[in-house]
Amino acid sequence: MTSVVSSSQRTIRIGSRKSQLALVQTYWVQEQLQKSFPQIKFEVHTMATQGDKILDVALAKIGDKGLFTKELELGMLNQEIDFAVHSLKDLPTRLPEGLALAAITERENPADALVVHEKFKDKQIDTLPPGAIVGTSSLRRLAQLRHHFPHLEFKDVRGNLNTRLSKLDAGEYDALILAVAGLERLGMGDRVHQVLPASVSLHAVGQGALGIECRADDIELISMLKAIEHPQTRDRCLAERAFLRDLEGGCQVPIGVNTAVSGDTLTLSGIVASVDGQNLVQDTVSGTTADAEKLGTELANRLRQQGAQSILEEIFKTIQRGS
Ligand code: DPM
Image (cartoon, rainbow, N blue to C red; front, side, top):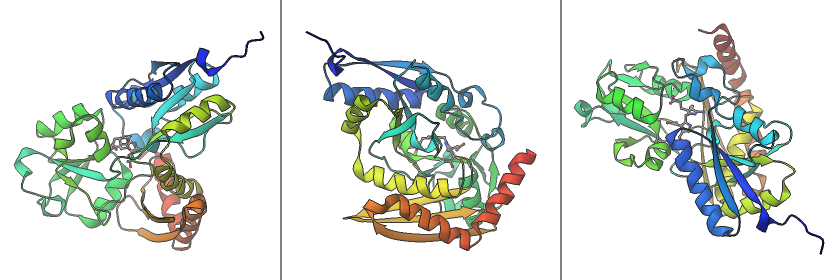
């Protein structure tokens, strides 16, 4: 009998960053796939990415193209691993030749959260006192919060969630802004003091969802990965990613979004803001979910007409100057 390499004989190697959050996410994906395909062996291989090695420099200053994904992508292209699990918001909107975004899993709450020091446990984002120090390294969060709350102070913060939370508890910051999803996945949902409404902070593109990337020609694997895809999350995230791609924004620009699906209708809101929070354009489009990516492009066009391009060019210049 001629033998074909069927999926029943295959061992599939999953690539992951080593951070606690990355591993929790990767093991979750492994478990889901193992349930759907009990005959296949799924192995986790960890790799450090540039973003894991550079911990003391503000994210926006070290460039953004694939900071947390490049090494994993090379691993796939070199056949060392078969697919990689990413926080979708860390995955650039343009993938290297030969790789594909095979699946997007069900999104957790995509919003940003306010986490406070004990002494401010009776405060919300709009009642923190003037001069309160808010930690974030996200230009998106910074720009929107500066716009709404110019009396607050903002300070860079890096490191993993535990490091950040200990700095907060030690009094180095009065509050932090973090993704609800990351805190919840690490079992620290109790640290979410306030879920920031969209009127205060539009979340990052893809926030709260996982993106599974693999070689574009691995048809067998791509069809298996569909087992863990969440179609509604995929529609929302494809619209968000098309919007960001069209504006040529990387992961580290002040661009935020919000999406909702009701029946077949997808609604996408987006914001582009200057880092000082002074200049800001925002709009909303809706249409059928089948046109998710077109809606992203439409919103990008509308915001460009309202001046998004010059806001972004200013930011790219500043980042290049390294200030
Ligand atoms: C990206 C940003 C941040 C991460 C920028 C942004 C936050 C950086 C910071 C692109 N990636 O959101 O505007 O606050 O210093 C990251 C987190 C998660 C994935 C942590 C977080 C968990 C949530 C998720 C870092 N990447 O945002 O608090 O999976 O969406």
